[in-house]
Length: 309
Image (cartoon, rainbow, N blue to C red; front, side):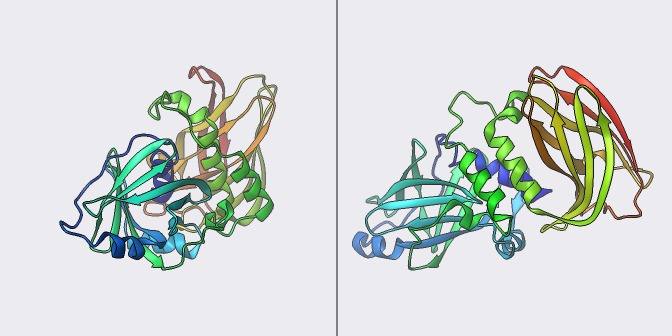
């Protein structure tokens, strides 16, 4: 599940326009004119680390194979495009006297060291390293270009709805964060990145609160398996539906199973109830017992349902 969690972590970095700080240092006596020419081009994420997650070369390669990219495009006029798996922002860049860079993006000024042919960005405990992919920047890049091999129409809808900035007053550790447009966007991207392997038609709930259906088995590009779900919110309150207990093939796998599906009042949403492939695998022969709860933004439970497969 590291990739999905890391995508959310990256969404809390540049895209939200929070204050970023530099790490490392630049050359002591750089040739600024030559350096500026050297920096023009397309840069791709090579690795990312935080206190909880690590994207090594293998994870980044898996992303690239699926068309899911995190890129920086820098042109000779000082313009930049940052695209994080379909969530895109424009900005500007310049070279400092010490050979490092300054980015203006998302309302933030970002100091970016350039050392050993790498650009390094740091936000909180998240450090992202970029390496140059091409000398030609793609200044015509569109949000969907980095979103992966997803359904084109659905992807465009998701990208169009993605917010530019949640604002400085949003606490990502607050339960209310799961009700933001940004989290719903990430939820939709995770769902669209899962490919159905077998259809299912199982109703978990059909009452005044929800229509909750399991529509298929699926696998995503990380190899995580799980269940596709469709949820219709029949109330006048935004709800988030999550698994509270999960037993797969007789074993407690709650720590390795995740469903977090936010559904606006009176609307429907799709989600992927996925299981960490490092610990367990879902198949057509699997048995499942799971307890799901729906909560409002105040964490008040409004319904509990059990699924047995």
